[in-house]
Each structure stands twice: as structure tokens, then as C-alpha cells.
Length: 110
Length: 112
Image 1 (cartoon, chains in turn green, blue):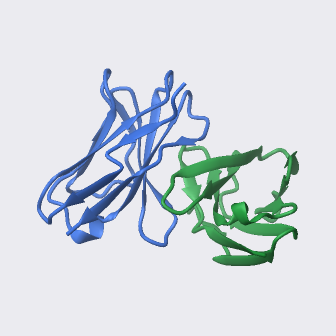
Image 2: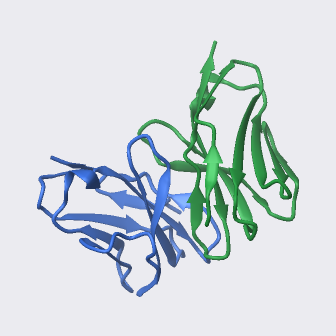
């Protein structure tokens, strides 16, 4: 079955890099996504990567995909207090629906 | 182009009442997805609709829940005879062709 796992918490100092990890099980995944959710808000699409890519960079965000190990990571460079939020990875297989991880709560301290 | 709209943003119901949640997709989007987020959990897929059709309802509870996306008007998620366990945030997302991923702000349902 489809399953997406993430660690629950990450705490980093302002200015450091954050790396949020995600593993998935569906080998037919076509797209993988990272979403950000701030308290009481909806989900904001941060970035996505096609399954035939292994890296994508977008300003402070770098996504790495290891398809062999079914491992996805999101690196946030120069993490700011405004980056504090819950980050969800999600994978899309052949069924057109997204399967979400449980979310990683990122806390940035001064 | 306005984003995905959901209303109401907050809804309070007593046990046994009905809840109706509305989602207006982005202009030009004909695909709508509903997700539920229980407190402190991730999002769980409920149902995927295209105009006038249910494509995938594998995540919908078998009873009390229904969804529609009529030719005109918003998509509606309807929960009959609500129970406390239905308290959650319900998110709608829309896309033009099954690509992703524009979510609305959610409706937070509280059942007393």
C-alpha cells in the first residue's frame, strides 16, 4: 500500500540550514511535493519534483530525490523564524490523488 | 484569479446535525479533491471529483458522508448526523487537469 513517513519534529537555529526528510513506498510515484502549513492556515505548495529528476533548486529550497531508496528531502538554506511551520511531503502515484506524510513541525529559534 | 475558496471557514454543529462545506475551485479548474485533517495529524484523502462525476471516493466513510460537484456552482461536502469524531479541518484542492496543487484555506468543523 501507499505510505509516506516523516519525522515529527525539527528544531534549528536561525540562519542554519534545515533538512526535512521523507520516505515513501509507492514505486509508481510520478510527482513528489512539499507543502507548508502555518497555524490555522491551509497548505501552501512550496515545490515539487518529477520522479525522473534527482534534484531541484528554487531560491532557498533544495529538493533531493533518491528514487532507489524512495527518499525525499527538503533543504531550507538560511532558515528564518518565518519558516516555522509544519512541512508535509506528499506523493502522487497513478491514481491522481496525493498521499501525505504526517508532517514535520519545524521550529526556528533565535 | 482568486484562489480556491472555501466556506464557511469555521462551522460549529451539535451532534446529530448536518454540516455542509462548500468549495469553489480556481477559475478554469474542473478537478476537485477533498481532504480531512484530524488534530495533530496529516491530511487524509477523501474524494476526487470532476464536474458532475465522482472519480475516486475510496477515502470517504461509507455512511453519512457525501460529495458532489455540480455543473454549476461549488463542490459540496455533506456530513449528515455529525458526531464528535467528525471534528476536523476539511480542505479542498483544485487543479485544471489532475496536476497539483492549490489548496483552499479549509473549513474547521467543531462538533459539540
